[in-house]
Image 1: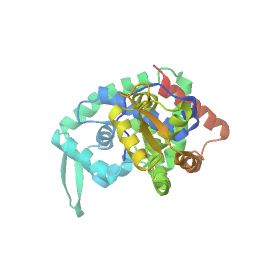
Image 2: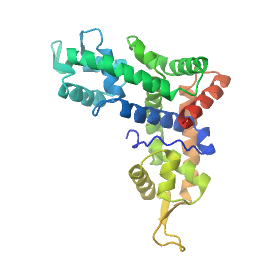
Image 3: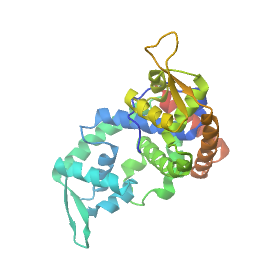
Length: 294
């Protein structure tokens, strides 16, 4: 599964700041929420990136674009369909391989990309307003180092210069590597933050957990349902207020959370290998500031 529906919340438990995977998740969620308010309905950061990847006016296959913007095949199919529906690209069968499609940006798509770029740059400036120019550039360079090996040589300059785009790419990679590692435990990456938060806070209502994680109430309900089926969490009505429910960790949760943290640490260590220990500490500080800044 992808990101739960994010709300852009700024609350961040000290215990969650110790988990780089959670910080990248929250940072990526903040980017998506911010861009969602700047881009028109039906267009997100991936659609914008796809339009930029078609900037040379040529025709490219969907798979080529997916590689350039680091998106899955399933994602690029949906993105392409949305762009075609809005008249921003045309899509035809690839003459070199009839099983695939090729995309070309229309004049309307070129105009939209220019228009949206101004909005995206404003969002980028707002998201990094708490950073000095030097800090922002160091943050960006760290993100480039982390994901550079996975970025296509023809990644548009506008994306390489975007902290927001790079954050979403690092999170995408971490999620893709972390999910299969957690599968034997019967949980997903998003559940690790839930278990960490509940271990830190003790029994709390679902609404409070949603605020702590910066996600919607509906997303928390789904995550708690998952963990309840797994035997890790239980909803209980307190004797003092039978109308409400508190979330309680069950005994099995401690061992699962411990194993998940070890697996997460191994994935993060491999992904952050290009950075020194000092750089990792600075990166963590930047991520915390990015997530919690007003």
